[in-house]
Image (cartoon, rainbow, N blue to C red; front, side, top):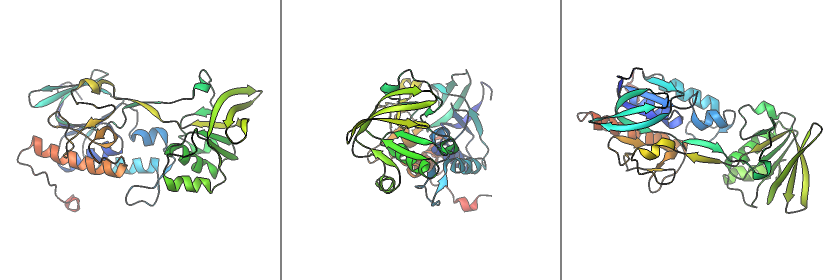
Length: 325
């Protein structure tokens, strides 16, 4: 892609919503470029939980994260678009009826419209203060390959969906699983919490990791268990599922009216910038529900309105995909 490249639409972020937006943009006949700062598509799914099962997308009783991303990529590639990975957009400036976008590597191009599907932006996993300065290959924030948990004593810190999902995923393959949460109530989906409570997973809640030490080859956590006091907990793998610190980076300078880590949008997903739309986790509006299935609907809304905005003779309403060749 040269500096003179021009597109109808630029999609920033190649997670699930971005991939579906790329498919839909091609379906509407728009010249499209899809960019992501990561070396692979799929966003958080590919980075954090490719082996976990996803249960809440239509059409699948359960599907592994990596397989779901592969299906989205295959679907999107039915359309002709440019895919640019390891390219983080650092600047977006309006020039006449288009926007000039520049990436951190110096790539520059024009787009008549843009869809921001950046998820939570750049995410830095949270760590435990008690483990500051500790370096161990057995301490991790996510598990790209579940087989590393096989026959291990697995300890998980956290109380959200990721922590509970990792506990359930590890239970069938690990030697033992213990989850530690600072509060008595978990924030995860109620059904998952109930499943965990009925499993062999040991729950320490309220509890807190106080320290770490090595004794020979053994790695040990000191844990405050409110039920019995301080205990030593040897582990083979320790997962810190404590969430992430988000950073939207340069987007804060684009004039999007960012509120916290969210971009306010209108009912058509347009931001306060004309022909610039935001979808998925990064977007915000009254009644917003942050689910992948909602993000897919937002992608279709944004792309159809973008198509009509840059081609006034084009209807917002698309044709039926059953008519697609």
